[in-house]
Length: 196
Image (cartoon, rainbow, N blue to C red; front, side, top):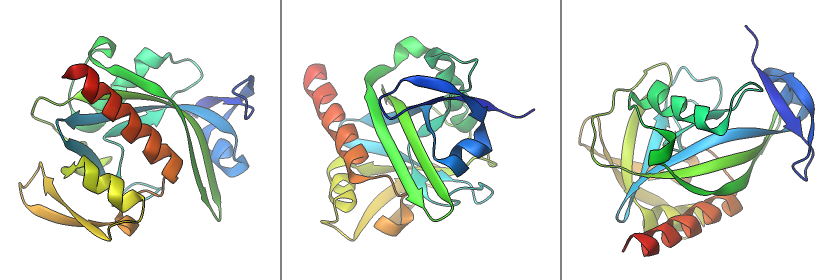
């Protein structure tokens, strides 16, 4: 079964539908669901499985995926269950914004309108689908901000799977643009303030 995505122009106006692989080849704008787990000054990075076609072994958004043409935003929570084995309701998430997320490589142009949500992680047990996820790592938010902005070379994270410390460099991260990271951090700072 081929997955079809709704495609948009750069002003977020719907212009049609297309098969998912073709969307990335053609660089069409499409919709995704992003969910960031965070708690106090920590943020949680998913480490992508080595089996993934794109960015194997890289650190990325806690849980994320494409929204197919027949899915609503609320259907996005299935990504959390599929990737992390944690069943949440859409109502448990806090809307952070719709952020443009562009990743441009030689043979690959991923242009997303990312419907981005936050979830205050409560140390629930996660069960990784090893086809999707190798680990989840907790890092200091301000350090992640510094490494994405190029102010630090290496940060340390703690693996939720082994409890060991891991070293993360900028090259270990999926190459989201700085504007995407800034939107995420600004939104988390606002959510932080409203939770105090």
